[in-house]
Image 1 (cartoon, rainbow, N blue to C red):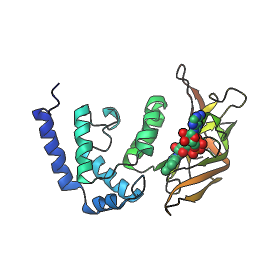
Image 2 (cartoon, protein in one colour):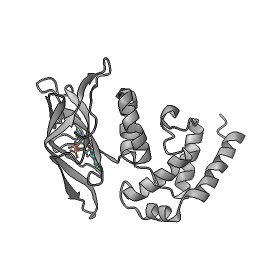
Image 3 (cartoon, protein in one colour):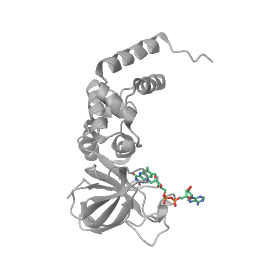
Image 4 (cartoon, rainbow, N blue to C red):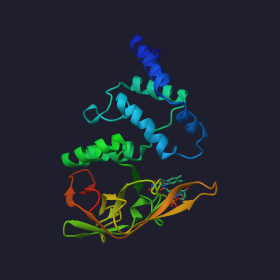
Length: 244
Ligand SMILES: Cc1cc2nc3c(=O)[nH]c(=O)nc-3n(C[C@H](O)[C@H](O)[C@H](O)COP(=O)(O)OP(=O)(O)OC[C@H]3O[C@@H](n4cnc5c(N)ncnc54)[C@H](O)[C@@H]3O)c2cc1C
């Protein structure tokens, strides 16, 4: 098997190297090198994301119709490797790589048009609300309750270990919309504006003194949405424009 890069791939590698030499600011490289946490500082990540987005290279993993690059696996590999060697930070994956693919697969056209550009531009900064005090590895034990009330859900309970909840403006959550069925059922996916009344973030300071993770409390938080079920996917998705 020949694992050498083709002439086109070698040209692409040079193009990436030149772009990084021209466009990756030294203060971003320094901040990345000094970072002791899982993610670099929000401002640093978003600054680099904006530079990549302007070039059209922020989300090689996305389909081209939403802003992806259309690169081959070899090009993606070359790009990642060159970014790493140049000292570029990893973009924060919470919105870009955790939420966006779910919206692409299960969201309505309206949700795709609303959320994907804002995730790509960094206008929306998301955190991930899956883990709970009694539901970590066993996620099916989650209890954060979302009860239907007309065209809203009323959300009560808490999420824990929520990375960057104190910096995020939105949270994507797994919530329990149906009790009484087996634990793996009756779980829905809600998008909630962190500015909604009733959302409260408590910091969790790690032994290293970092503030990266949090506990997020929801008290009668109202999130607007319509029930929406996808057949055959084993996933019940609720359409919820963030906020109220
Ligand atoms: C730095 C950091 C950031 C995080 N950020 C987020 C975030 O943004 N959003 C979010 O939702 N979560 C986040 N988490 C939580 C994380 O993704 C896991 O869900 C969580 O750490 C696991 O739950 P737990 O801590 O309750 O551990 P537990 O689930 O209690 O597991 C404890 C130990 O028991 C083992 N164990 C559990 N069940 C079994 C079993 N049945 N058989 C054998 N062994 C078992 C596990 O492997 C583990 O070693 C973060 C965690 C860390 C460390």
